[in-house]
Image 1 (cartoon, rainbow, N blue to C red):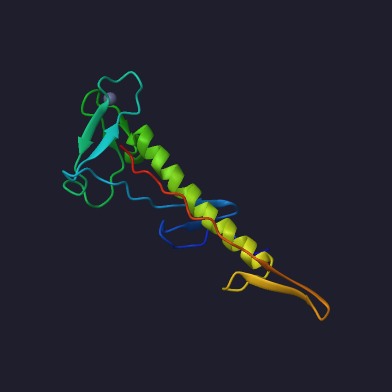
Image 2 (image 1 turned 60 degrees about the vertical axis):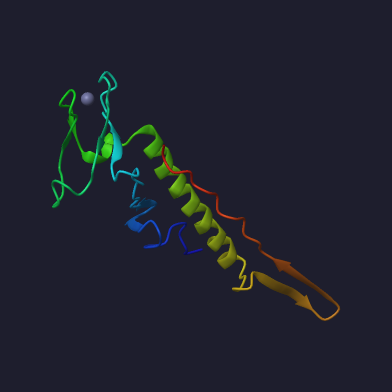
Length: 141
Ligand SMILES: [Zn+2]
């Protein structure tokens, strides 16, 4: 079986990093005002949650982001809220479900119709593969 669970590209712009490692790019939904919630990685920070409007400041990559309350510095992706992390994991799990379905389809030789006929003559059998609807991923609150 040569197909991997994740294929390069797709809705999450998957990158195959070799072995069993992949990188997904997930765009976090923004609020109606165009801003998104960020949470300070320092658990002792209070209130620790603030909002930013992406794309209005540094545009050529940002090595570090700073908490406006405690000045804690870390990579920007470390400021994801628990809800944003949950959303990202759910999006990847959804993509994994799609990938596993394609692996099963390829491994058993199902065509695009999702059906396969076995045997012939007196005894034959037709099997079909039905895919479950991909789960809805609730956006972060
Ligand atoms: Zn902080």
